[in-house]
Image (cartoon, rainbow, N blue to C red; front, side, top):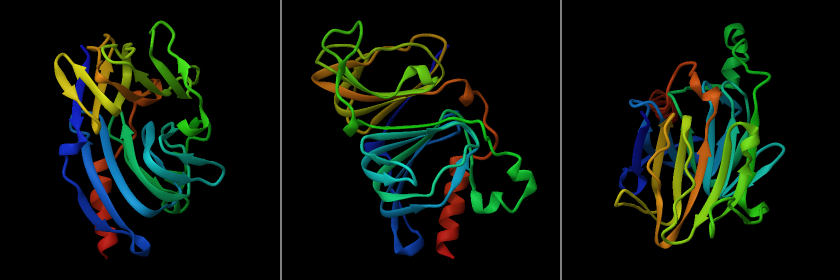
Length: 254
């Protein structure tokens, strides 16, 4: 049986909190892990993230703005992926960013990890890290789907994958089973799922061995960001987004 969850972020309330250096953060809790997957959205000008890692496979999705990492820069729409317990950062920028997990996963700050022999043993020194930005890529046809085109940010040969797919009206988004989980973000236009309309700000999560119900591009077409996890997402190593967000909010208020 395939798990399927649809979230309309346009209907999810925003919270506001003050961060370090006087930065105001706007956040949405799209999926809190109670059904498995997690999604949190953050908007900030002057976001400055310290080095850290996540205790599960994770994607960062940059919907707007930019993020500057030590050795690369992402421009929206951009994606960044890490396997579980793979440290990255610092990074900074002005952006509208989403963090997603296929299963609940916590966040470990490297400033805490380096002080603990136990936590240092968690570090995944052989884990993968990938990234890509659409502004550096050209459109290419989608094999077997006439009229559809795509930009491949992370190729399927990497195991995990990320691509922007633009479908003309009435055509179906290419769908395959997603045994470890896949997120589909409607970036522009509309998509229909068995008659239900999914507009911009809508996200679908699917997970299972069966092919999910297809998304059909609406009358204006649909542009969808598709990110797919692989077997690294099968295990989570503790913690969760809801717990982390509560901890961050409390620390900022001190």
